[in-house]
Image 1 (tube, rainbow, N blue to C red):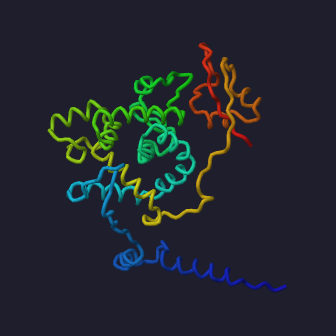
Image 2 (tube, rainbow, N blue to C red):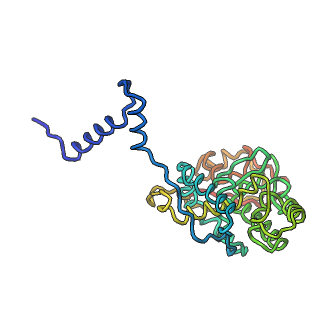
Length: 304
């Protein structure tokens, strides 16, 4: 029986043929001028419109200052055109913001600070070269100061709930010290004493008037840029569907107050595997849970 192509198939073949003609990289002896002309006709990078007004929490960004506009423009460009990373921010935020947002609200920390976690870690349990870990990139000393357990067996910096509470406590303390959420955010990167030293040295009172090291100098602008992009995805070229976003499975909590000699066996007993146990409880760092002090630990078990 003779087969005929559908309209959709014909259109698909036409698109392939056109793309082959326009974008072919074959050795056809094309001149440099012709190749450059094709590039100019088909490649576009657009400058971005900066918002007329920008805020971090309730504090206006002084966009009337040229250096401030340039710094924000830089972070907007970097975070808009790093498309793969930006899209991953949206995907992971759908999974983890519902955990982070209620804790910020409970503690009285402005919602804008969830974007601090985004720029710190990309909402992954990463480790920095300095040894900071987790979504909120806490150093061991800071974590312990906020009553978190940090050792080879258990590292609660990898617990998104406990680390969010610790970050909130730090930020509230910094806000009380500086009277400004912007300076509190800067101190999360530089430390309270570092920010205070620069304020005293330079005889100014706000972040936007400070001359700082490159990392802290970019820090708040990065938060503001990511906030603007994530609140207006289509304005910056990010398109996705609900089904494209990551989701967290429902879990049940199991409380243990004894040692667990083998977490793989523990996982199997709860009808999951070791990998799943560690994915939902990354603060468990070894194959066993020592728990010599008979502390109560809450372990998340995904419900299938």
